[in-house]
Amino acid sequence: MNLTDQINNDIKQAMLAKDKAKLEALRAVKAALLLEASKDGSGTVSEEEGLAILKRLVKQRKDASTIYHEQNRPDLAKDEDFQIEVLSVYLPAQMPEDEVRKIIKATIAQLGATSAADMGKVMGPIMGKLNGKADGKLISTIVKEELGN
Image (cartoon, rainbow, N blue to C red; front, side):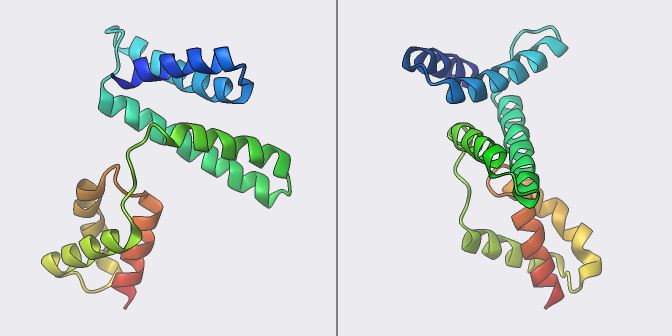
C-alpha cells in the first residue's frame, strides 16, 4: 500500500473514530500530497516525494513547537507535538545516534578531514549516506563535534 492510500485509509478511520485532531493532521498531509501531485499533472506522487513532503511537514511542526515553547504557549505547542506524533508514524525509523556517529567518523577518516573548515566537504557524502535515516540537525551537530576535536 502506497503512502497516499495509507493516508486516505487513516483519514477514514479517524472520521469513524471522530478523532478531530488526528483528522486535521492527516488532512494537512493529504492536501500537501495533492498539491504536489497536481504540479506536474500526473496526479500521483512517488514514495520518495511523499516521504520528502512528510519530512518537511514534521520539520515545520517541530520548528513551530519550539517557537511556541519559547513564547510560553504550551497550548499551541501541544497541538504541534500531537501532529508530529501522528505524522511520524509514516516516516522510516531513524538511526540511533551511536550508529550515525560511527558512519560520520568513518566518512571523516575516509575523506581525511581534520578541521571545521572541512565541514562542507564532509556533509555532502554523509547526507547522501544518511538521507532520511537520520535528522540533519543531529548529523550537523555530530560532524561539528568530530571536526572540532
